[in-house]
Amino acid sequence: MKTKLLSILLFLTVIFTMNSCSSDSSESKNDSDSAKTSKEVEVYNYSTSELEAMNLINDYRVSIGLNSLKKINHISFKSEEHDHYMIVNKVVNHDDFVARSQNIIEVLHAKKVGENIAYNYNSPQSALTAWLNSPAHKENIEGDFTHFGLAIKEDPTTGRKYYTNIFAKI
Image (cartoon, rainbow, N blue to C red; front, side):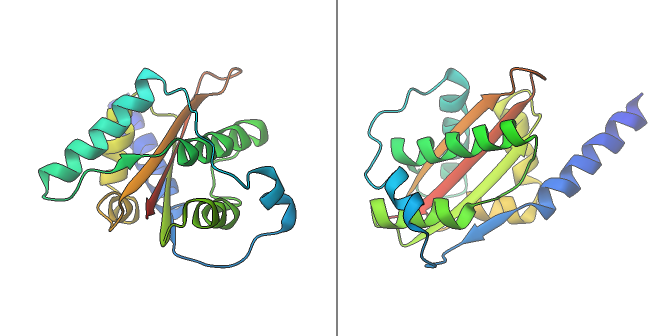
């Protein structure tokens, strides 16, 4: 049983390492994306788990001498949109990251944007631990960012959780 669990954890770590994404791209997005969310989303209702995850990330950053990140509701909304996309499409990926980052660059005047995703972790601490064990995800967490947003959504069919954490330097 222990060997099987370790094999599953290793497999998930490899999958998440391969799916890491960070970009300071300035590619333009199409007009339909602009129309969808061309102004800042000011209200976002955070769950206890989302606030816990954000606090854990900031606690880690401060513990290694970095600035804590300020949450921005608009970025959490973009994270939530991606969680819903992954749930509906039964995928774990960074599809449309360029569109999300371009929206954040245009709406919030961000200089750069990075993204971490995770899937099927039962707690914010377990997701953070996995991210910190992945060099590319850890690089985003320790990156030269000033703000962030995060969403954790549960697939109503499977009960599995999807995490999207977007970082921005503003």
